[in-house]
Image 1 (cartoon, rainbow, N blue to C red):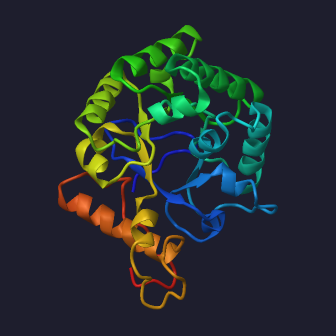
Image 2: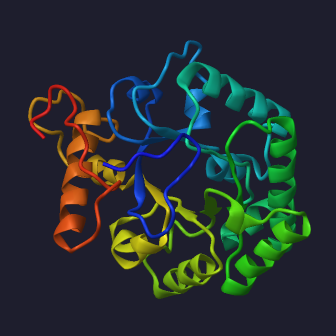
Image 3: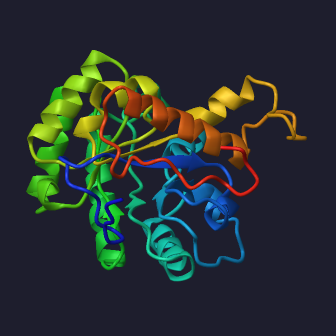
Length: 279
């Protein structure tokens, strides 16, 4: 299995690094595969200890803007939290910046324009980088149409940020339409510019279509599926939407299916089975 240093993701000609989205921060001390953990959940943990797996931080921006129409967490507060996580959990592969999503309903929620969301996204990345320059902040390219995303790349360049030179760049506002041909074209175009992309919330359809053009991806699809099914045998909860046993077996099944379709699996590898599972 190929290894990379913390904060450095594989180049695009390598297999995609897959992070399982996790509701529960304590999975960091139980799982043996990469996790994508939300700041909104992690900040509630008073005590932290070194993680047992690779991990990356989700800013929780979608929920933040949906609920409030703005960011209520300041860049200073977020940078301070990121430094705390890195100190106690170990350095993450990346920490997602506080970006501004550009879905039409989000634009309506904030009352701002797509261009204003993009300007605020770029400004936030610059702020975080200045506040905590040793942390691996993930810049996010935001937009809705392909010209929007290309304009956002230009905004970063105008601010002195060469996205193609960075280890990874988030692709925003695609998780609810990421299996469509439109998103495939956007991914291909941005990857063609040399951007090593992280796909947020990529579902199975998206992984099948353009996983080879992503440096990394995360998914919470396992929880959505589990919420609509009875619990696994031996599980006492109502459903397995927050169950590490279910998540582990779902992940193994997903990666096995992708491997069967001929995908590379160097980093997109099967996990070490969770203790106590039959996976």
